[in-house]
Image (tube, rainbow, N blue to C red; front, side, top):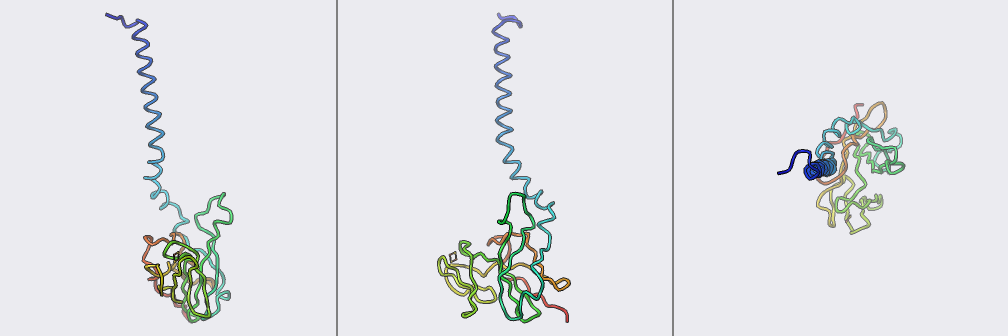
Length: 183
Ligand code: FES
């Protein structure tokens, strides 16, 4: 029989503690990213940036009946984002009172679509996707219209609700109601 103070037992105890410490370290290391993933929606919801309205510019920049290119600053910007936080979009002034703002990304695989006023179409250079001027799908592989940002007018400035990323699952695309300016 081995006494409690025997070298055998103390070595066994040391190895047991070392093993326990190792297991705790492994569990902590593995659970950190999982916890971060699980908690990220909560932290995102608490971030006011996702709920903010972002200015696109004065209404003067968007002539009636035309579609213009614009950029806005991502409301959830990090110091290291640099110019990548400047997000492009297309602004359509329908009739001087109603506006539509589209994400630039094609709803097929995300290539940047371009506006062609000659044909009144948004065209995607990657696989030939096409969209009508109101953002609805016209032809090609995309299954839905362009992502449309909710927008509003305040003090002569056009603002969009830009916290949500323009992905197919984020919101029904091209379904938001047009904004009418009170005259
Ligand atoms: S990414 Fe636009 S059609 Fe494929």
